[in-house]
Length: 213
Image (tube, rainbow, N blue to C red; front, side):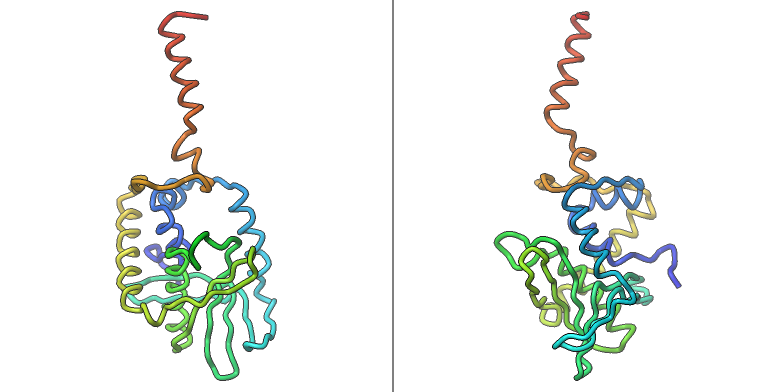
C-alpha cells in the first residue's frame, strides 16, 4: 500500500537532475514540456505496456512491472520500463532513455534512478538484480555498476530520500543549484525568465518613469 510519505522512483531522478525543478512539480504542482520531454514520453509509451511481455536472447522481458520497497529507510514505489528474467534466474532492469549524454556513458541521476529500482526489485523478488540504460538515439545499452557501487549508491539514495521528505513536509521548494545548466530543461522559462524578457521589462519601467507614452 502506498503511503503519503512514500517517494516515487521516477522522482529520485528528477530531484538529482534539479532539486528546484522537482520542487516546482512535486510541491507547487507546476509542469511544462519541451521537445526532450515529449520525446521521452513517446519512448516510454512504447515500453509501458503491461501486456507487452516478450522473449529475447537474454530471456523473458516484462514491461511496466510494478515494484516497491516499504522498508522505513526507503518507502519507494514505481515501475520498471523492462525487467528481463534469464533462464538462469538472473534479473536485469533496463531503463529506456531517448538520448545518450555527451562524453560519458550515462548520467549519475539516471544511474541512481535504476539503483532505486534495484532496491525495489531485490525486495520484491528476493534477488540481486543488475541494471542497464538503453539509449534510443544510439540504440545501445550500457551496463550500470550497481553491485560494485552498492554501498556508495545506497548511502546517497537514503540521503536523497531524507532530503526530499524534508522539503515535502515543510512545503519548501529547493533553491536553484549554483551553476545549474538549464538550456535543455522544459522549466527554463519558469525558473529563469529569458534575459530578453527582463530587458524588455526594464525598458518598459524606464519609459514609465520618464512618463513617455
